Amino acid sequence: MQPSVSIKDLSLNFGSVKVLEHLNLDIAQGEFIVLLGPSGCGKSTLLNCIAGLLDVSDGQIFINGKNVTWEEPKDRGIGMVFQSYALYPQMSVEKNLSFGLRVAGMKRAEIDQRVKRAAEILQIEPLLQRKPANLSGGQRQRVAIGRALVRDVDVFLFDEPLSNLDAKLRSDLRVEIKRLHARLKNTMIYVTHDQIEALTLADRIAIMKNGVIQQLADPHTIYNKPVNLYVAGFIGSPSMNFINGTLDGEIFTAEDGTRIPVGAYEFGGARTGAAKAVLGVRPEHIFIGEAAEGMPFKADAEIEIVEPMGSETLAWTKVAGIPVTFRCSSDIPLAAGDKVVVGFDIARGSLFDAESESRL
Ligand SMILES: Nc1ncnc2c1ncn2[C@@H]1O[C@H](COP(=O)(O)OP(=O)(O)OP(=O)(O)O)[C@@H](O)[C@H]1O
Image (cartoon, rainbow, N blue to C red):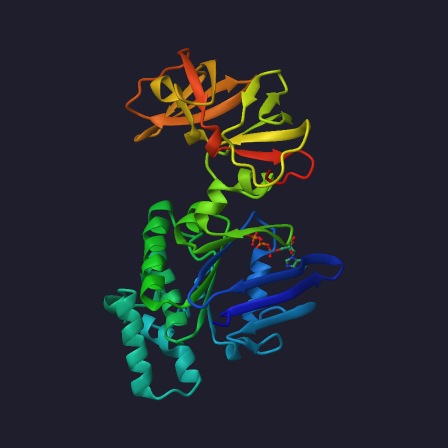
């Protein structure tokens, strides 16, 4: 099947600033792709290129097999939802939803039917006669999504649509967007710097840094097998613990001399002789007490700080001379000053070449 959206060798410069360089990305029909990265990495620029809001410097964009690189935004079969809802304040919700269709000269009956369907899908039927000023932030964003919905497009583009909302509304609307995708099955391209949104919504996440896609994979792979140190550190909260050292065969030696056997780790490529490396272990892959018993690496440690989070506890300690965070169930009594044995589940860890920063 041909890709829904295909980006070929795309480059974009603002004057001498190269924001995107030779970027390639194929998005399948009906796929939910999240472009994730820190501020300034070029994710909005990429979305705006797909939308036709920016002229590309080089390369091509195909939507459903058609080269749209130089097409007007309205002719690309896309609908866009922005962070700021940009509704017309003097118009009712109904008028906001139908405005674009009326301008395009669509027949009244068809407009009514589309507005009705969008309002039903987004559960905003009771709000149709209200003005935007009389809506909550979440309701306004739903209307903004509705405006893309009525256009009956192939591809939806979202640019941080939830970032103006408070935490509770964000998580509610996140679920609604997921439900919307499950129902409509359109291709969706969604820009965010929020890793929870990325992990929960995406079929595949493209993690970007300085205009380059670092890893393009499903959330499980991104989380468990990050391709490099950047992706490993970007995804996960609290962050993966990193220990610098030297890797020689199946033994990793931390900078303070602690020897950590890594035979349980599944190497992607060949193992080299002694070389500088970084061992990464996620906070939930460090265990204490009985659960630590069978682990390939164990160490005595003293708890420095405990943060109860409700269902779980985050604790800070030191292993191999460096600060390490781990998670455990809140049922385990833990206090600052406790002496514990910690065990690392090396098989679920990550090893990186310190020079290239790539996964080993
Ligand atoms: N019109 C412009 N002229 C010059 N540089 C620009 C212009 N627009 C964006 N940039 C630069 O391009 C880079 C990428 O910007 P972009 O908005 O795509 O990043 P982003 O990852 O979406 O970040 P954010 O989450 O902050 O929106 C930034 O360094 C930005 O300063």
